[in-house]
Length: 147
Image (cartoon, rainbow, N blue to C red; front, side):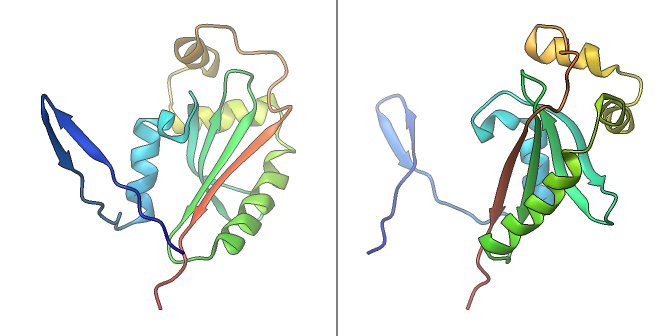
């Protein structure tokens, strides 16, 4: 049995139901998350977008959390969640090999002229830990192709 949930906007004493709309392109969703990663449920510092891997793929978004764990964020339209999960795990195995120097280089390519340590301090109000990427977090989203 399916379940539908509604989202409403409150304007004073008036409620208006928000009509869901599809997001046309993966790049559009990437941009939304890049501009406000808290929509994923926690504060993150985006450190790269469309990051090339050693295996020829591109990770949609890479981020750090306040512990300097690396978040692999992979978004796919018209792919089953199983396919997206497999791709995310593949990317995650590559990310797990990255050290501080590689993470710093990824960030430098993403935001030239800003030091990773400075951006980390601005985002989290603290010093970037010496140990970076001691853990990885995977976030993936896929939608089943329409029939």
